[in-house]
Image (cartoon, rainbow, N blue to C red; front, side, top):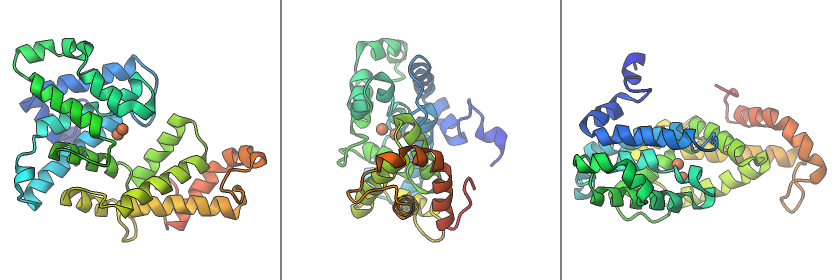
Length: 278
Ligand SMILES: [Fe+2]
Ligand SMILES: [Fe+2]
């Protein structure tokens, strides 16, 4: 893809910038998300770049699903709400404790602070209260296992794809940095979390399933690749005896683990048949 096309609005992809022109309030929301991020703590994983990645991915899911699946449900999906919610979905991580970031985000979007920021857009009919309430609900549901609307399902699928393949592995390195946890913790968390997704019907849309396949390595799906990578990390930690029999990091190994994280990550990539950083 040509660089100039891809970067037409502040690094925003072509389809999203077209949506910004059709729905100018989306550009305002993007500016708002960046303002919140700048005025708050630094987050290396749940930041505007991640929210834009989800927005672009959600847009791809939506347009692909319209072609693949002629159902009434996808025909009624509202792309304005999907992109607006994607661009706001993790702002709660800036505003409070991460654990509650979905609900914090939902409440913030319904707060007078947020509504007064968008008062001009509401007055110009660029967005209305019913839409704001729906966006808040999608944001509030983005981490749930049950999604009440097609818009929520599409954002959920986009956020799940964020964990897939090489992209997902690097995003989990960012999550590790953001939470300040060691490699063992993030590996256990990823193996459990991805396993749960793989065991359930983990994508709502055919489009996301298709996208997942394109994000995998060596014939594996994207999430399968992520799963095997983190299982490799756990295997290496076991082989090198970093983990005691009860699955906990041995205290005297903690500093060595920290020093060896890069080599363990590189070996886990090698076992996937990939070069570290490729
Ligand atoms: Fe989130
Ligand atoms: Fe997210």
